[in-house]
Amino acid sequence: MTRGFYIGRFQPYHKGHHQVIEQIAAEVDEVVVGIGSADQSHTLQNPFTAGERMMMITKCLAEMDLVTYVVPIEDINRNSVWVSHVTAMSPHFDVAYSNNPLVIRLFDESGINVRQSPMFDRDQLEGENIRERMRQDEGWRELLPEPVVQTIKEINGITRIQHIADTDASGRADPE
Image 1 (tube, rainbow, N blue to C red):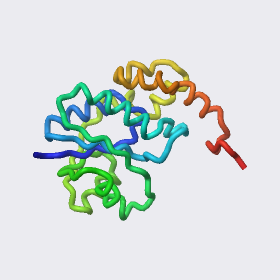
Image 2: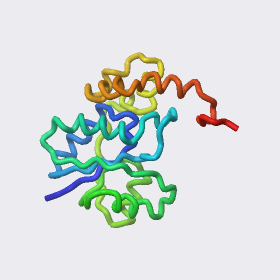
Image 3: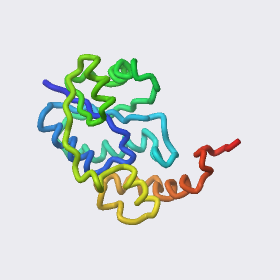
Image 4: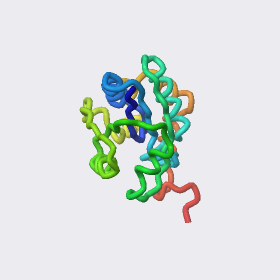
């Protein structure tokens, strides 16, 4: 049995992420999905909580014939021990999937096999672009799997993003 690990911020989980997981599923028996920056939320770059992202991903992967584990991975801001942190927070995995040069290097230096995956429609399926479309509430729904659209509706995510965009530039609720 082979278990793969795929990490992302998933802010939000979009059709490109889903296509990557479908491809990974063709190569492994089980997939661990690591929700990166799990400690971040309510900012323009990270508007959704780890729990909300877990809902988005779990609902999308439920339709697949694949054993999956969704685990939150908090930022520790110490690259030299990041892989140890990841492996401590997730089930054992045999191969990691990433296109991030730093993540690839860190896994490689730790002796973990890393595979890159193709980027799907990257000019449209890019988190910053999708979040901006969500802020404007135009042209974002077709870029996300339907369970994610429903989750965003359930949590009133569009209003959240719009309110966050209107906050103080520091992004803090209690600016000094």
